[in-house]
Length: 172
Image (cartoon, rainbow, N blue to C red; front, side, top):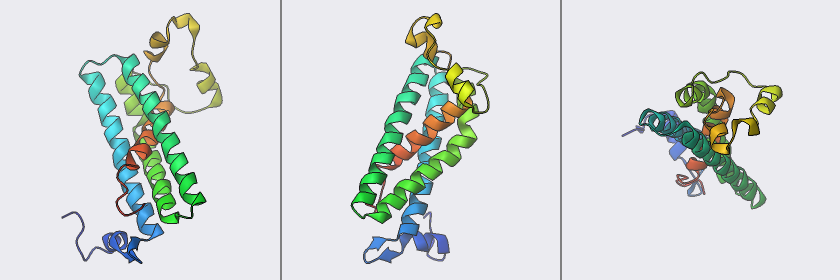
């Protein structure tokens, strides 16, 4: 069993609040699940490239998955706040935080696994420099250059928080 009854952190996560977990417990649950989702996405991207998937495909899936996951988390948080469901909004905030922590740590290695070496650091000029370049030919050729470390980390973080939305437990 992952949590023993003597573990105070686990007790806080399990503690009922009129039959529902508290906002703090939901934030911690979201934090753990968002971090786990980001690790799953990072591992999947690295495994896909190792198994021979083209860099353009992996980059495209990471981009689309990150966009959908991030948008889903932001929509969910906004909707939960609007409806006064603060425990679920705390879960969303926790899942995004967990995803960002892990995404920040694995962005470089994920980018390197797709097309080494991934550019490090973030700046607006780097992002503008990485925008679609028609001189590369097709969108597929552009995606084949792979993400920089910040983009890989951001997509991993946003995708991880989106995956966490499917595993809310009692934080609904």
